Length: 136
Image 1 (spheres, rainbow, N blue to C red):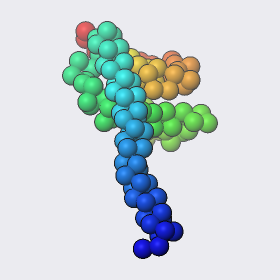
Image 2: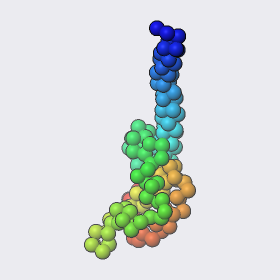
Image 3: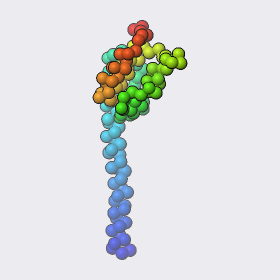
Image 4: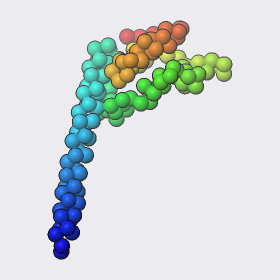
């Protein structure tokens, strides 16, 4: 094997050996962030007395590091389609019953994963009337 080929084999082998460690450090960082946010949410829900069965593992799998299903709904304002999905479509008589616990839980999720959208969340839920009391 020529010196140039040996060097190329060495570089490729070194890259292949270093690639998993580089990937795992990023992944480990994401996992740590995921777990920290999930712990924060679980602690907040317990303090508020909502979602008593929520665990860190469940919160991690539901929301990851960014809760895209929740936070992306607020990008550029809450669309009519997103409002209908979240609140039901009153034009078709399909208004959803939303409990005060659900509103509190939703607020905690937004506060944990996309705090910049908290004012918009509060504006949306302020317009909801009436709430169904949770009976706590």
